[in-house]
Length: 189
Image (cartoon, rainbow, N blue to C red):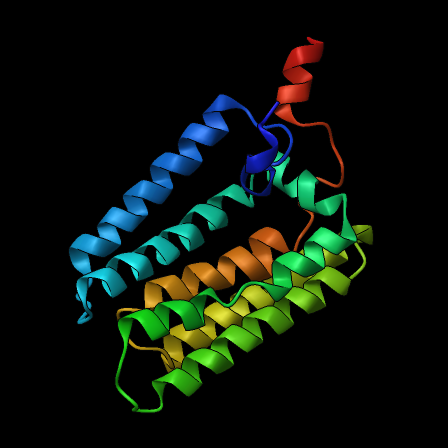
């Protein structure tokens, strides 16, 4: 069982393998971002923004684990709270950018559209794969929009893409429909 303070990240039950994969990939993605993307911000703003970006990367992966999926799928209240507090893209923008070139408005629009997509997916019935289809449509449309229109500054684009995947698809779709977790299955065996 997972400590209660970590339920929002790993759910009530996760395997050690899932935890190691989530943490390793999140750290790797965050370090890769730090080493390859140039950000012109003060040191504290840079690191705080990178921490927020790392949370997006970790959450994108963790939301695909069965433990995290089941934790949120079991409570409509938790699902709506999760959606409503996700303003990470705006946070990263405010920390990393100072230019008033219209890109704040673009990031705001992208963040709002991601939350709308997550809400649409969340409201779509799970029956016959409709929710998965709605989430997939929102994800594909969003990724296409981000890649073609490129509305956000280049240093924020990786965060924007992973934020879209995290909130509008990895989180908003109930991928396991209440199936027992691998940790529960291992205990039963």
